Length: 253
Image (cartoon, rainbow, N blue to C red):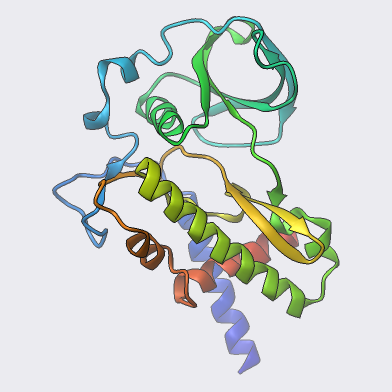
């Protein structure tokens, strides 16, 4: 029975990982599939863009002081940098800059979503990087759970508790953003959920990466109960799959 359970876990985790690797898509508002009605569409759908959104990368970003190039991937990304500063207002290492290969709907949609949730600092082109388009955003605290020393050193029974705490806090954070800013973060792979620890307890979470796919604009009628049900706050196959992906991620680090 244990062998069968292990095989099933591996199959489900592999499926979950491949879902994250799927190419971006625009959500056809007339062909919703099994999505709830309060989800309006993915953030890269040009039907949401205003003229101002479309000009998000029309200006050059001045006084950008590059820091370390971070080991972050992404099919639409050229690179991700920490910043030593930006302009006169931001002088400390409190910012992250994502540089895109080109201006497309995915880049415009991510800038719009970040602006909506209050994390966007600026967008434009960077002369030092061949005038590539970029967004500067606020740096969030924490690190992925599987990369924390507390998780690495804990027994499996304690790790299980940490995973459950992270998932519950993640769903609460996602629901808070969705009901206040009307953006739903659904690309919740473990690398996008940063935790702050207090001993062996997950104290808080921060959600990062508001680019497509799986980031949506939602209706202003959405409720916290709607989002919590969608997120799968209570034990469900969705939470099980998320935990299996985190387990596999911890084996790779």
